[in-house]
Length: 400
Ligand code: TTP
Image 1 (cartoon, protein in one colour):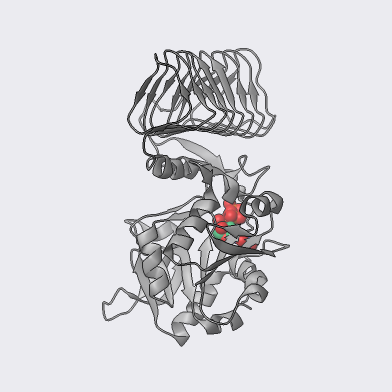
Image 2 (cartoon, rainbow, N blue to C red; image 1 turned 60 degrees about the vertical axis):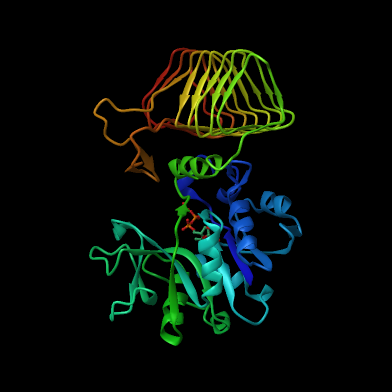
Protein backbone atom coordinates (compact mmCIF):
# COMPACT_ATOMS: atom_id res chain seq x y z
CA UNK A 1 0.00 0.00 0.00
CA UNK A 2 1.45 3.39 -0.98
CA UNK A 3 1.54 5.52 2.16
CA UNK A 4 1.72 9.28 2.59
CA UNK A 5 3.22 10.48 5.87
CA UNK A 6 2.44 14.08 6.81
CA UNK A 7 5.45 15.79 8.32
CA UNK A 8 5.28 19.39 7.10
CA UNK A 9 3.58 21.05 10.09
CA UNK A 10 5.19 23.78 12.18
CA UNK A 11 4.34 22.13 15.49
CA UNK A 12 3.55 25.44 17.18
CA UNK A 13 1.92 23.80 20.21
CA UNK A 14 5.15 21.90 20.83
CA UNK A 15 7.29 25.05 21.19
CA UNK A 16 10.04 25.57 22.26
CA UNK A 17 10.99 22.00 21.26
CA UNK A 18 10.09 22.69 17.62
CA UNK A 19 11.87 26.03 17.33
CA UNK A 20 14.78 24.36 15.59
CA UNK A 21 13.39 21.06 14.32
CA UNK A 22 10.25 19.60 12.84
CA UNK A 23 8.03 17.85 15.40
CA UNK A 24 8.34 14.47 13.60
CA UNK A 25 12.10 14.62 14.30
CA UNK A 26 11.73 14.80 18.09
CA UNK A 27 13.42 11.86 19.81
CA UNK A 28 11.26 8.98 20.98
CA UNK A 29 13.39 6.18 22.44
CA UNK A 30 15.91 5.14 19.75
CA UNK A 31 14.59 7.12 16.78
CA UNK A 32 12.67 10.22 15.72
CA UNK A 33 8.90 10.23 16.24
CA UNK A 34 8.08 9.90 12.52
CA UNK A 35 10.48 6.97 12.18
CA UNK A 36 8.23 4.98 14.53
CA UNK A 37 5.26 5.89 12.32
CA UNK A 38 7.17 4.88 9.19
CA UNK A 39 8.50 1.60 10.65
CA UNK A 40 5.04 0.61 11.92
CA UNK A 41 3.56 1.46 8.51
CA UNK A 42 6.08 -0.76 6.74
CA UNK A 43 5.37 -3.62 9.16
CA UNK A 44 1.65 -3.14 8.47
CA UNK A 45 2.09 -3.33 4.69
CA UNK A 46 3.33 0.02 3.33
CA UNK A 47 5.14 -0.71 0.07
CA UNK A 48 6.47 2.84 -0.48
CA UNK A 49 6.50 6.03 1.55
CA UNK A 50 5.83 9.56 0.37
CA UNK A 51 6.83 11.96 3.13
CA UNK A 52 5.36 15.46 2.93
CA UNK A 53 7.89 17.93 4.27
CA UNK A 54 7.89 21.70 4.71
CA UNK A 55 9.02 23.16 8.04
CA UNK A 56 12.68 22.32 8.85
CA UNK A 57 12.64 19.69 6.11
CA UNK A 58 16.38 19.11 5.61
CA UNK A 59 16.79 16.93 8.71
CA UNK A 60 13.77 14.83 7.71
CA UNK A 61 15.19 14.16 4.24
CA UNK A 62 18.61 13.43 5.67
CA UNK A 63 17.30 10.95 8.23
CA UNK A 64 15.02 8.91 5.95
CA UNK A 65 17.12 9.10 2.75
CA UNK A 66 15.89 7.29 -0.35
CA UNK A 67 14.99 4.04 1.40
CA UNK A 68 13.69 3.34 4.88
CA UNK A 69 12.94 -0.03 6.51
CA UNK A 70 13.40 -1.67 3.10
CA UNK A 71 10.91 0.44 1.13
CA UNK A 72 11.54 3.38 -1.23
CA UNK A 73 11.00 6.89 0.10
CA UNK A 74 10.02 9.98 -1.91
CA UNK A 75 9.48 13.52 -0.69
CA UNK A 76 6.82 16.08 -1.54
CA UNK A 77 7.39 19.70 -0.51
CA UNK A 78 4.45 21.65 0.95
CA UNK A 79 5.62 25.23 0.67
CA UNK A 80 2.95 26.78 2.88
CA UNK A 81 1.34 24.81 5.72
CA UNK A 82 -2.28 25.33 4.65
CA UNK A 83 -3.70 22.13 6.12
CA UNK A 84 -3.68 18.36 5.85
CA UNK A 85 -5.65 18.14 2.55
CA UNK A 86 -3.21 20.61 1.03
CA UNK A 87 -0.33 18.45 2.29
CA UNK A 88 -1.75 15.33 0.59
CA UNK A 89 -2.36 17.38 -2.56
CA UNK A 90 1.38 18.14 -2.57
CA UNK A 91 1.99 14.37 -2.51
CA UNK A 92 -0.54 13.59 -5.25
CA UNK A 93 1.91 13.76 -8.21
CA UNK A 94 3.91 11.00 -6.48
CA UNK A 95 0.92 8.65 -6.12
CA UNK A 96 0.33 5.69 -8.42
CA UNK A 97 -3.20 4.68 -9.37
CA UNK A 98 -5.02 2.79 -6.61
CA UNK A 99 -5.88 3.33 -2.95
CA UNK A 100 -3.47 5.19 -0.69
CA UNK A 101 -2.91 5.45 3.04
CA UNK A 102 -2.32 8.72 4.91
CA UNK A 103 -0.73 8.84 8.36
CA UNK A 104 0.28 11.70 10.62
CA UNK A 105 4.04 11.79 11.13
CA UNK A 106 3.49 12.99 14.68
CA UNK A 107 1.39 10.09 15.92
CA UNK A 108 2.21 6.63 17.26
CA UNK A 109 0.09 3.69 16.12
CA UNK A 110 0.19 0.04 17.13
CA UNK A 111 1.11 -2.39 14.39
CA UNK A 112 -1.81 -4.90 14.56
CA UNK A 113 -4.33 -2.04 14.34
CA UNK A 114 -2.54 -0.43 11.41
CA UNK A 115 -2.42 -3.79 9.63
CA UNK A 116 -6.20 -4.11 10.07
CA UNK A 117 -6.62 -0.58 8.68
CA UNK A 118 -4.60 -1.46 5.59
CA UNK A 119 -6.68 -4.60 5.06
CA UNK A 120 -10.03 -2.78 5.43
CA UNK A 121 -9.77 -0.09 2.73
CA UNK A 122 -11.40 2.37 2.47
CA UNK A 123 -11.06 2.91 6.20
CA UNK A 124 -10.27 5.30 9.00
CA UNK A 125 -8.55 4.47 12.29
CA UNK A 126 -10.76 5.20 15.30
CA UNK A 127 -10.00 5.33 18.99
CA UNK A 128 -12.50 5.10 21.83
CA UNK A 129 -12.26 7.82 24.51
CA UNK A 130 -14.45 8.79 27.45
CA UNK A 131 -14.64 12.47 26.55
CA UNK A 132 -14.45 13.06 22.79
CA UNK A 133 -15.37 16.79 22.88
CA UNK A 134 -11.83 17.99 22.12
CA UNK A 135 -11.31 15.71 19.09
CA UNK A 136 -12.64 14.98 15.63
CA UNK A 137 -15.54 12.60 16.32
CA UNK A 138 -16.87 9.98 13.89
CA UNK A 139 -20.55 9.59 12.97
CA UNK A 140 -21.30 5.92 12.59
CA UNK A 141 -24.14 4.05 10.92
CA UNK A 142 -27.49 4.83 12.57
CA UNK A 143 -28.42 1.14 12.58
CA UNK A 144 -25.96 0.79 15.45
CA UNK A 145 -23.19 -0.65 13.32
CA UNK A 146 -20.25 1.35 14.66
CA UNK A 147 -17.88 0.00 12.04
CA UNK A 148 -19.39 2.05 9.20
CA UNK A 149 -18.43 5.73 9.23
CA UNK A 150 -20.87 8.25 7.79
CA UNK A 151 -19.13 11.52 8.66
CA UNK A 152 -16.90 13.41 11.05
CA UNK A 153 -17.33 16.51 13.22
CA UNK A 154 -14.63 18.63 14.93
CA UNK A 155 -14.77 19.19 18.70
CA UNK A 156 -18.55 18.78 19.10
CA UNK A 157 -20.28 19.88 22.31
CA UNK A 158 -22.68 16.96 21.81
CA UNK A 159 -20.57 14.11 20.35
CA UNK A 160 -22.36 11.63 18.06
CA UNK A 161 -20.16 8.76 19.33
CA UNK A 162 -17.11 8.24 21.49
CA UNK A 163 -15.04 7.11 18.53
CA UNK A 164 -12.46 9.71 17.55
CA UNK A 165 -10.55 10.13 14.33
CA UNK A 166 -6.88 9.08 14.68
CA UNK A 167 -5.84 10.76 11.43
CA UNK A 168 -4.93 7.38 9.90
CA UNK A 169 -6.78 6.72 6.64
CA UNK A 170 -6.84 4.45 3.63
CA UNK A 171 -8.58 6.35 0.84
CA UNK A 172 -10.05 4.81 -2.32
CA UNK A 173 -8.35 5.42 -5.68
CA UNK A 174 -10.95 8.10 -6.61
CA UNK A 175 -9.95 10.27 -3.63
CA UNK A 176 -6.91 11.46 -5.57
CA UNK A 177 -9.37 13.66 -7.46
CA UNK A 178 -11.09 14.97 -4.29
CA UNK A 179 -8.16 16.78 -2.71
CA UNK A 180 -9.28 20.27 -3.83
CA UNK A 181 -11.35 21.21 -0.78
CA UNK A 182 -12.56 24.60 0.46
CA UNK A 183 -11.27 26.33 3.61
CA UNK A 184 -12.69 25.09 6.90
CA UNK A 185 -13.97 27.37 9.67
CA UNK A 186 -10.46 27.57 11.12
CA UNK A 187 -9.11 28.60 7.70
CA UNK A 188 -7.36 25.32 6.78
CA UNK A 189 -7.73 22.82 3.93
CA UNK A 190 -8.68 19.72 5.88
CA UNK A 191 -8.39 16.03 5.08
CA UNK A 192 -11.58 15.41 7.04
CA UNK A 193 -13.45 17.02 4.09
CA UNK A 194 -11.95 14.34 1.85
CA UNK A 195 -13.07 11.73 4.39
CA UNK A 196 -16.62 13.16 4.26
CA UNK A 197 -16.61 12.77 0.48
CA UNK A 198 -15.29 9.20 0.79
CA UNK A 199 -18.17 8.44 3.18
CA UNK A 200 -20.68 9.76 0.60
CA UNK A 201 -19.22 7.86 -2.32
CA UNK A 202 -18.23 4.55 -0.71
CA UNK A 203 -18.46 2.44 2.44
CA UNK A 204 -15.78 3.59 4.86
CA UNK A 205 -14.94 1.26 7.75
CA UNK A 206 -13.97 2.47 11.21
CA UNK A 207 -11.09 0.32 12.39
CA UNK A 208 -10.78 0.48 16.17
CA UNK A 209 -7.16 1.08 17.24
CA UNK A 210 -5.88 -0.63 20.36
CA UNK A 211 -3.27 2.01 21.00
CA UNK A 212 -2.73 5.44 19.52
CA UNK A 213 -1.05 8.64 20.64
CA UNK A 214 -1.21 12.05 19.01
CA UNK A 215 1.96 13.92 19.93
CA UNK A 216 1.08 17.59 19.73
CA UNK A 217 2.13 19.13 23.05
CA UNK A 218 5.29 18.76 25.15
CA UNK A 219 3.89 16.37 27.75
CA UNK A 220 2.75 14.08 24.92
CA UNK A 221 6.42 13.70 23.99
CA UNK A 222 6.89 12.27 27.49
CA UNK A 223 3.92 9.93 26.88
CA UNK A 224 5.45 8.83 23.55
CA UNK A 225 8.69 8.00 25.35
CA UNK A 226 6.81 6.23 28.14
CA UNK A 227 5.31 4.02 25.39
CA UNK A 228 8.49 3.30 23.40
CA UNK A 229 11.13 3.34 26.15
CA UNK A 230 8.67 1.04 27.95
CA UNK A 231 9.20 -1.54 25.18
CA UNK A 232 13.02 -1.89 25.49
CA UNK A 233 14.54 -5.16 26.64
CA UNK A 234 17.62 -5.32 28.80
CA UNK A 235 20.80 -5.01 26.69
CA UNK A 236 24.02 -3.78 28.24
CA UNK A 237 26.47 -3.34 25.36
CA UNK A 238 28.11 -0.16 26.63
CA UNK A 239 30.69 0.12 29.39
CA UNK A 240 29.00 -0.54 32.74
CA UNK A 241 31.13 -0.32 35.93
CA UNK A 242 31.05 -3.37 38.22
CA UNK A 243 29.76 -1.16 41.02
CA UNK A 244 26.76 0.10 39.06
CA UNK A 245 23.33 -1.37 39.83
CA UNK A 246 21.23 -1.83 36.70
CA UNK A 247 17.69 -2.98 37.47
CA UNK A 248 15.19 -4.33 34.95
CA UNK A 249 14.86 -3.44 31.28
CA UNK A 250 17.68 -1.00 30.69
CA UNK A 251 19.57 -0.49 27.44
CA UNK A 252 23.10 0.90 27.62
CA UNK A 253 24.16 1.23 23.99
CA UNK A 254 27.67 0.57 22.73
CA UNK A 255 29.75 3.70 23.28
CA UNK A 256 27.81 4.76 26.39
CA UNK A 257 29.44 4.70 29.84
CA UNK A 258 27.87 4.03 33.23
CA UNK A 259 30.24 4.74 36.13
CA UNK A 260 30.50 3.46 39.72
CA UNK A 261 27.71 3.98 42.20
CA UNK A 262 25.02 4.53 39.55
CA UNK A 263 21.56 3.03 40.00
CA UNK A 264 19.35 2.76 36.89
CA UNK A 265 15.78 1.48 37.24
CA UNK A 266 14.26 0.37 33.95
CA UNK A 267 12.76 0.94 31.60
CA UNK A 268 15.50 3.32 30.51
CA UNK A 269 17.59 3.92 27.42
CA UNK A 270 21.13 5.28 27.58
CA UNK A 271 22.26 6.02 24.03
CA UNK A 272 25.72 5.87 22.45
CA UNK A 273 28.18 8.48 23.62
CA UNK A 274 26.20 9.24 26.79
CA UNK A 275 27.90 9.16 30.20
CA UNK A 276 26.17 8.52 33.52
CA UNK A 277 27.70 8.93 36.99
CA UNK A 278 29.49 8.41 39.20
CA UNK A 279 26.75 8.14 41.82
CA UNK A 280 23.74 9.10 39.70
CA UNK A 281 20.18 7.75 39.99
CA UNK A 282 18.09 7.26 36.85
CA UNK A 283 14.50 6.15 37.29
CA UNK A 284 11.99 4.62 34.86
CA UNK A 285 10.95 5.86 31.42
CA UNK A 286 14.02 7.97 30.92
CA UNK A 287 15.82 8.58 27.64
CA UNK A 288 19.39 9.82 27.86
CA UNK A 289 20.13 10.55 24.20
CA UNK A 290 23.43 10.53 22.32
CA UNK A 291 26.34 12.28 24.06
CA UNK A 292 24.18 13.52 26.95
CA UNK A 293 25.81 13.62 30.41
CA UNK A 294 24.30 12.82 33.79
CA UNK A 295 26.86 13.50 36.51
CA UNK A 296 27.54 13.03 40.21
CA UNK A 297 24.57 13.01 42.58
CA UNK A 298 22.01 13.75 39.88
CA UNK A 299 18.55 12.15 39.92
CA UNK A 300 16.62 11.93 36.65
CA UNK A 301 13.12 10.50 36.52
CA UNK A 302 10.68 9.94 33.65
CA UNK A 303 12.43 12.47 31.44
CA UNK A 304 13.94 13.04 28.01
CA UNK A 305 17.45 14.43 27.76
CA UNK A 306 18.08 15.21 24.11
CA UNK A 307 21.49 14.78 22.47
CA UNK A 308 24.32 16.62 24.20
CA UNK A 309 22.25 17.74 27.21
CA UNK A 310 24.28 17.95 30.43
CA UNK A 311 23.08 17.72 34.01
CA UNK A 312 26.50 17.79 35.64
CA UNK A 313 26.06 17.56 39.40
CA UNK A 314 23.73 17.74 42.39
CA UNK A 315 20.50 18.26 40.44
CA UNK A 316 16.99 16.81 40.27
CA UNK A 317 15.08 16.52 36.98
CA UNK A 318 11.64 14.87 36.97
CA UNK A 319 8.98 14.47 34.22
CA UNK A 320 10.81 16.96 32.01
CA UNK A 321 12.15 17.44 28.50
CA UNK A 322 15.60 18.99 28.05
CA UNK A 323 16.45 20.06 24.50
CA UNK A 324 19.70 19.60 22.64
CA UNK A 325 22.85 20.80 24.43
CA UNK A 326 20.95 22.13 27.45
CA UNK A 327 23.27 22.64 30.42
CA UNK A 328 21.99 22.59 34.01
CA UNK A 329 24.25 24.20 36.60
CA UNK A 330 24.92 22.39 39.89
CA UNK A 331 21.95 22.34 42.22
CA UNK A 332 19.32 23.03 39.55
CA UNK A 333 16.07 21.59 40.89
CA UNK A 334 12.85 20.92 39.00
CA UNK A 335 9.46 20.96 40.74
CA UNK A 336 7.05 18.44 39.25
CA UNK A 337 4.10 18.32 41.66
CA UNK A 338 1.58 20.84 42.99
CA UNK A 339 0.78 20.91 46.70
CA UNK A 340 -2.95 20.78 45.90
CA UNK A 341 -2.36 17.60 43.81
CA UNK A 342 -4.17 19.19 40.82
CA UNK A 343 -2.81 18.42 37.31
CA UNK A 344 0.11 20.66 36.36
CA UNK A 345 -0.80 23.42 33.88
CA UNK A 346 1.34 25.11 31.26
CA UNK A 347 0.63 27.75 28.61
CA UNK A 348 0.16 26.37 25.08
CA UNK A 349 0.12 29.17 22.48
CA UNK A 350 -0.84 31.57 25.28
CA UNK A 351 -3.68 29.53 26.81
CA UNK A 352 -3.03 28.02 30.23
CA UNK A 353 -3.68 24.31 29.56
CA UNK A 354 -3.94 21.33 31.88
CA UNK A 355 -1.40 18.64 31.08
CA UNK A 356 -3.71 16.12 32.74
CA UNK A 357 -0.63 14.96 34.64
CA UNK A 358 -0.21 15.07 38.37
CA UNK A 359 3.54 15.05 37.77
CA UNK A 360 5.02 17.34 35.14
CA UNK A 361 8.27 19.23 35.33
CA UNK A 362 9.82 21.62 32.82
CA UNK A 363 10.46 21.93 29.09
CA UNK A 364 13.72 23.49 27.91
CA UNK A 365 14.45 24.45 24.32
CA UNK A 366 17.89 23.78 22.85
CA UNK A 367 20.93 25.42 24.48
CA UNK A 368 19.19 26.59 27.66
CA UNK A 369 21.73 27.19 30.44
CA UNK A 370 20.79 27.37 34.10
CA UNK A 371 23.12 28.83 36.71
CA UNK A 372 23.79 27.03 40.01
CA UNK A 373 20.92 26.64 42.46
CA UNK A 374 18.22 27.50 39.92
CA UNK A 375 14.70 26.43 40.97
CA UNK A 376 12.29 25.69 38.14
CA UNK A 377 8.57 25.55 38.84
CA UNK A 378 6.34 22.74 37.56
CA UNK A 379 5.04 23.42 34.04
CA UNK A 380 7.59 26.12 33.21
CA UNK A 381 9.01 26.36 29.66
CA UNK A 382 12.32 28.01 28.75
CA UNK A 383 12.87 29.09 25.16
CA UNK A 384 16.00 28.09 23.23
CA UNK A 385 19.13 29.91 24.51
CA UNK A 386 17.41 31.15 27.70
CA UNK A 387 19.66 31.51 30.76
CA UNK A 388 19.14 31.95 34.49
CA UNK A 389 21.26 33.66 37.13
CA UNK A 390 22.59 32.24 40.42
CA UNK A 391 19.80 30.98 42.62
CA UNK A 392 17.07 32.22 40.27
CA UNK A 393 13.53 31.03 40.96
CA UNK A 394 11.67 30.58 37.66
CA UNK A 395 7.92 30.66 38.20
CA UNK A 396 6.76 31.45 34.65
CA UNK A 397 7.76 30.67 31.07
CA UNK A 398 11.00 32.40 30.19
CA UNK A 399 11.97 33.62 26.74
CA UNK A 400 15.57 34.72 27.30
P1 TTP B 1 -1.30 19.39 13.31
O1 TTP B 1 -0.85 18.71 14.56
O2 TTP B 1 -2.71 19.85 13.24
O3 TTP B 1 -0.37 20.63 12.99
P2 TTP B 1 1.14 20.88 13.35
O4 TTP B 1 1.92 19.61 13.32
O5 TTP B 1 1.66 21.97 12.50
O6 TTP B 1 1.09 21.35 14.88
P3 TTP B 1 0.50 22.70 15.54
O7 TTP B 1 -0.98 22.63 15.42
O8 TTP B 1 0.97 22.57 16.94
O9 TTP B 1 1.12 23.89 14.86
O10 TTP B 1 -1.04 18.47 12.05
C1 TTP B 1 -1.40 17.12 11.94
C2 TTP B 1 -0.41 16.45 11.02
O11 TTP B 1 -0.43 17.01 9.72
C3 TTP B 1 1.00 16.57 11.48
O12 TTP B 1 1.65 15.35 11.20
C4 TTP B 1 1.58 17.69 10.63
C5 TTP B 1 0.82 17.56 9.36
N1 TTP B 1 0.56 18.81 8.63
C6 TTP B 1 1.13 19.00 7.39
O13 TTP B 1 1.90 18.18 6.90
N2 TTP B 1 0.83 20.16 6.71
C7 TTP B 1 -0.01 21.11 7.20
O14 TTP B 1 -0.26 22.11 6.52
C8 TTP B 1 -0.58 20.89 8.51
C9 TTP B 1 -1.50 21.91 9.12
C10 TTP B 1 -0.27 19.72 9.18
